[in-house]
Amino acid sequence: MKNIHTEREGTTLTLTIDLSKSQGPSKSGKSTVIATTGGNKEIAPGIYLGLNVYRKN
Image (cartoon, rainbow, N blue to C red; front, side, top):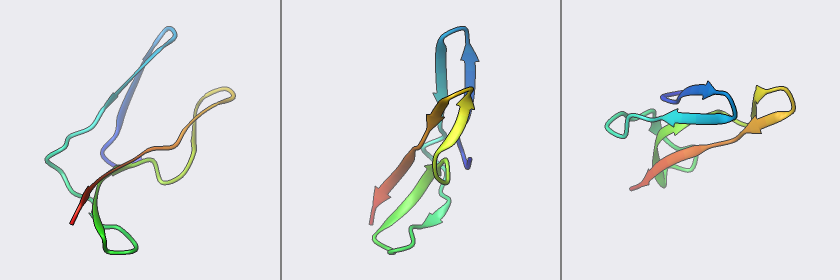
């Protein structure tokens, strides 16, 4: 995961993303990636997270 901090407390998942950061252009070049999980990631047994945060160019 890039620029995504996860914190799990009981049954609550909190995501923290710094919106001022950039991970570079998307593959298509049409947007700038701010944060990504890089596909679906298992965050707890049987629970997955897939997330992309981006800015249109």
